[in-house]
Each structure stands twice: as C-alpha cells, then as structure tokens.
Amino acid sequence: MVSKRLQEIPVSGTVNISNMVSQLKVEGVDIISFSMGEPDFSTPENIVDACVESLRGGFTHYTPSAGIPELRCAIADRASSESGIPCSPNNVLVTPTKQAIFMIALAYLDPGDEVILSDPSWVSYEACIRLAGAVPKYVPTRFEDDFIMDPANLAKAITKRTKMIILNTPSNPTGTVLPESTIKAIAELAIENDIYVMSDEIYESIVYDGAKNTSIASLPGMFSRTLTVSGLSKTYAMTGWRVGWMIAPEADILAVNKLQTHSITCCTSFTQPAAVEALRGPQDRRDEMVAEFKKRRNLALDLIAEIKGLECNVPQGAFYLFPRYDVHMRSVELAAYLLKEGHVAVTPGAAFGPSGEGFFRISYATSEDQIIEGFSRIKKCINALKGH
Ligand code: GLU
Image (cartoon, rainbow, N blue to C red; front, side):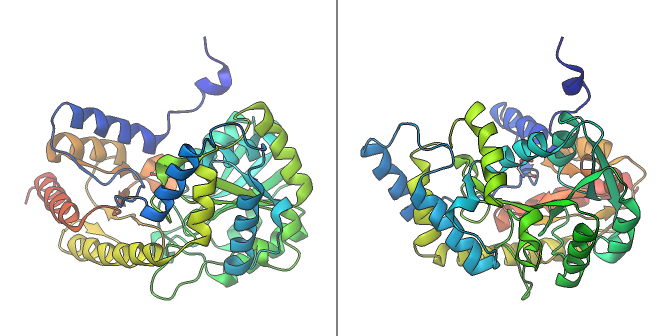
C-alpha cells in the first residue's frame, strides 16, 4: 500500500493528458495536441553542439551537487542583468525546475503550514504542498480581472499559519503577467507578515505587447525571503533536458542543496556546459521563438473569437490560453469529449484549481497548421454540443 500522503494526490493533470496523447498516437490516432506546455521547436543548434561536445569530451560524471561553477555564474549574471535580482553564484542551485519546487516544499513546509496560491494555478504546486503535509489556500481570481490576484483578497487569506505565498508570473495556465503594482503590494504583505515567497518565473522571457516580468526578489527587502525558480525548458525549447535552477540567499541554497545531495545528487552533467551556452551564447533564436509564439497566440485568439460558446482574454505571457466555455459540462468531461470525438487534446480547467472549472487550457506552442486544424475540430465539437 502506498503512503496516505501519496494516496491523497492525483497524478499530474498535465502530464496525464500528455501520456494519453502519446499512447493514442502510438495507436495511430491522428491527435492534435494542445495539452502539454512544450515548444515544438528544436533546441537551438549551438546548445546541442555544446552538449555533444561535452559528451564527446567525457563530461559524463557527477558534478558538484549545486552545479558547475560556470553555470552558477552564468545563471547569477542572467538573473541580475535581466531580472534585477541581486545575486551571486553562491545564491544559485542548479536543478530541474520541478525538482526545485518539490524540494522547496519539503525544505520549508511543516505539517499544518499554510501556503497561499492563486486559483487557478499550475497543477503541481498543490501536490507538492500536500506531499509536505501543508495546506494549500487558494485565492480565487476572475476572468473579468484577467486572472490577476487582488492583494486585498490575498491579505484576507493570511493567517498565523501562513508560511509561504506562491507566485507564478507569467502564469500557467492563464498567461497572465502580474502588474508591477500587484507584485509590490504582495511584497509588502510578505514583509509585513514575515512570509516566504516562492516565485516561479519559468516563462519570464516569453512576454508580448511590451509586457515586462517583474521578479519579486528584485524589490527592496524581498531577496532575503524569496525563493525564485526558473529554467531553460520553455525559453530555449529544452523541455527534455531538465535544466533549471533556484535562486535564494546562500543559507537557503545550502538547505535545499542538502535535499539535492539525498535525491538526485546533481543535475545531469553534460547538459550543464550546454546550459552555459544557452545563457551566454547568441540569443536570436530565443527572440525568434517568442515572436513566433506571439503570432500563434494571435491566430488562436482569432479562431476562438469565431467559436460561439467560447470567450478568452488576451494574455501577455507564456504560451497558454484559458478560454471560458458555456456548454453544460464539467471541464474534465469536455476535455474527454474533445479528445474522443474531436481528437484534440486540451487540459481541463479544473485541474488547475476550483476557479478553473468552466475553462480549459490550450497550449499554443505548436505549429500554425496544427492550431488551425485543432480549432476547426474544437468548433465542430462545441457546435455539436450546443445543437448548432
Ligand atoms: N509545465 C508544463 C505544462 O503545464 C509541462 C507539464 C508539467 O510539468 O506540468 O503543461
């Protein structure tokens, strides 16, 4: 029998759908997948070359558990120059981003501690909180407010047991980029109430329409209480590489690194010199990919506007849309229907928290042809459900 802890959490809603899609594809079903948040581009060649070179050069053994010094240095340079986070290499732990989130939950949360997060939120925060024995406290957000958390509602959710606030901007699943004024207000609350912030900024470079991501750790008084996580997966089309990091005060890096020494030991060795190349090498592919995502977002929004029964806000970051639907079905049922009848995979909104019911998530990090075909299938399904 598995532990009670594990029994109480579901399998990841995002990874689950993606596994189902892979299985259906193996069976020869022609599926359009809007499910997994992963760029369809190849990893830029200079990064692949750096990895092959490190493999050929025999860089295939353990590295220091916190990561190779060159990479810690490249990450610190990037975070200070692009995000204004006042950090040095000793403030960096190299680890896959999801591993960082998992370890942070284990490192900071005791049973009964409360963690505040925006509703809807990415699926694995709640699981990590629960696995640590802590309690998730969702602060609902609204479609009408572009899913921006109201700091006044956050303030109401704070109790004596609140240990941490989780921020994710740009957001998965809504694509919302939190305005600087909201982040400042949240920072004030964190300082006033002596609360940690875990800020997941994995989509930090994928922003549109002049939006700018604000790193809460860059605000006065916040570095000492912020655990920032990010990585290469989304920005450089490197999801399979599993390279990310955590940035925090040195004592926190040492604490979480203790868990790393008892779990994965270190991040994969030969990907680390390639990660240095990603951060220090030419950035033109990154910019081109973001420009392409923006075109795809606009195309998908135009196609959604043509479907009666769907409405969507215009998100300024990440590569997700979170349309609201007016069909009388739960989002899990609708996603199952779209997969079975339309052969199109989306993620049900309820997977992201109670406020996600009535929505579904589209990942538009796929080709324009796929987007056009996928929305044509969704349109047919929604029309059929609405009796048109
Ligand atoms: N973060 C991506 C998503 O939400 C990949 C899957 C996962 O890590 O949940 O689709």
